[in-house]
Image (cartoon, rainbow, N blue to C red; front, top):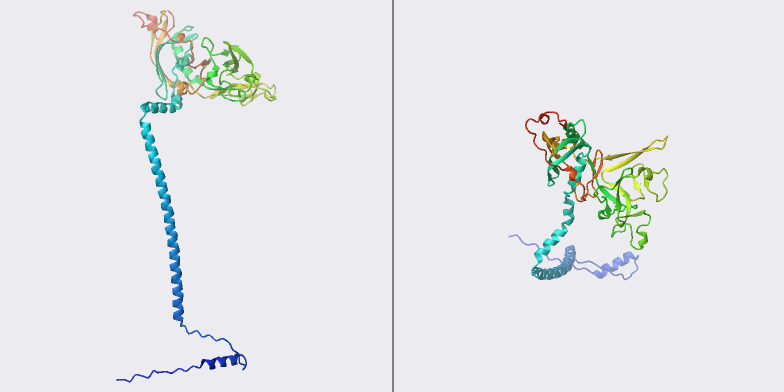
Length: 421
């Protein structure tokens, strides 16, 4: 067995001598006391001390973060609790109000009325005026010379394209007494039928309520002048009829307007037909009624048309202004194709005159019958006809149905209707 080595080592270090020698070395032999420090802590222990410090710091951070988290959770818990308390309180209030509301016996009727009141505007927009059909017919049917009278009429306004279905008779009251010419002319006139609507405005451009306007005379006919065109009366002193009047000074209610009396009421005449000669000026003065070349009307009460537009052109040599109008609102949208004629045959009228019996269906523009379109006019090839819901004379548009021709009536059975015997 091998003999273990003797590891018994003796260290005898004289720190005092070492200190003196170092001092002598540094001071050139002169003895001087200096502090001497020797680090006897191993490196591994230094690393351990650093690790312990880091651990303690991490523990400290964890404690701080944990405390902050607990505080945040506590804050959110208090908020959630408060919100829940508010929700519970509101729920209780709603429940109480619902119970109280449900106890009203007339609740159902009230809700129905409220719902209907909320729909008044939309109902008005969809409302149709059936009474306009008669005046529309007065524009469509010829009444002077050659005439057409209706014996049966059916109107359908339930669709987007209203239709008129009627039985009628054409009477050639004038030579050459060919009733087929009357019917052919009636059909071809559909492409020239127009309509117009809009609003009356005061001289400042404010819209005048429709109920403040009188557009028909005592006989129901449209107010018109043979030279100047169509006009209407504005009840300027009526309640709410002057939109630009502030109500402070009654004398200002009619200031700047020429008034007159009509049926015992103070009115102002407003021209629906532009007064081209009076309103157009080369160099208009401030606040003077003005009609520009592009058709703009200013500083005068007038009618603002939706369909009709006017334009003028100037002859540089004579300064003559020529005015033209444009209207794209067709009364019968499909023109000639918008009318269908069927079952035409000869017959005898109530006075035994020879007439042409026929059935017809005409498709009209729905805009003509919309309640929301105010101051409606139907415009035929020979002029304008009122299409408001006021009274009009319609007796000449309707007549007794023509009778069948008796046997042996050679004139009636002839292919060419001469209108007489």
